[in-house]
Amino acid sequence: MHYDYLIVGAGLYGAVFANEAAKKGKKCLVVEKRDHIAGNIYTKEMDGINVHVYGAHIFHTSDKFIWEYINEFAEFNNYVNSPIARYKDELYNLPFNMNTFSRMWGITTPAEAKDIIASQIKDLGISEPHNLEEQALSLVGRDVYEKLVKGYTEKQWGRDCKDLPAFIIKRLPLRFTYDNNYFNDRYQGIPIGGYTAIIEKMLSKADVRLNTDYLEHREELDSLADKVIYTGMIDRFYDYKLGVLEYRSVRFETEELETDNFQGNAVVNYTDREVPYTRIIEHKHFEFGKQPVTIISREYSSEWTKGDEPYYPVNDDKNGALYARYEELAKQESKVIFGGRLGSYRYYDMDKVIGAALDMAKEQLD
Image (tube, rainbow, N blue to C red; front, side, top):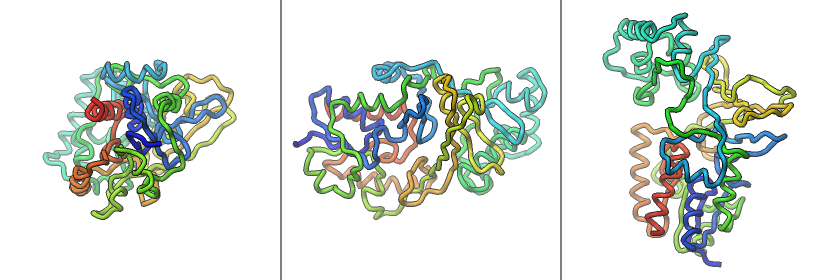
């Protein structure tokens, strides 16, 4: 069979495009190198619990159109992301808000919290931050930085905060209300039944081949379609000929525990450097589960090397310049269109992935 589009990657971007193409009567072949669809939003049912295999994914958006679009494929619950930060034996609410400040300093009013933070920032006397540590200190003061930013950030990036560029933390939002809702977006929730079912519906009219690495069968696969939507790593597409783009990777340790409730919250961040993992996810709490057992995942941030799963692009000046050179090569392709977080070398929230895929579909199909 000949196809209108070969879509490389069965994640959210590719699935949205496939769904839109099907509406226009186009034939799509989707190839995926993993043994499952849904990319990094893949959820797997285990003992009645939908496990977020590649880390927590909470859908949130302020775009009503995107919210209504995703709700065509699933019913969403009313989960609100309210993570807890654990520093040694102290527990704090995130994002930084009055519950955080009250716990940290024993105060009760916004004016008290603002005065303490302003006083700490003034005492530090940092006029021009030269690294991430100075940038964070100049935004939130010493107490919040030392307990809730420093250790977590160093684990995330595998480097001392003094050795990280200031621009990584452009802002650290401080809320002077007793509100633990992490996101400011109007719409938020978890799809009942998990994300994989959403992608199954989006791909229902496409042909799908799993365990198929496009770059290892490029000539054969290219011959099957008029155009290619490529959502893999852009530097790997070009065999890294201009250099290797940097990523951070994540390793997960997932286990089932014979208890109905391990930590009382879906997300607990561990912010001291001595604890090797960055956070623990307790999956059942995303869907208010009542199962007699629970499943947790510990997340370990790590350096990315070829062969690892890339998670977060290292968007510094060096990598930005290298990506720009690859982007110029991509613009010269007559048959291949690059998209998604790996094809675009950027971190995307899920709503932005959907928006970008819909824009590309409109450009291609209208």
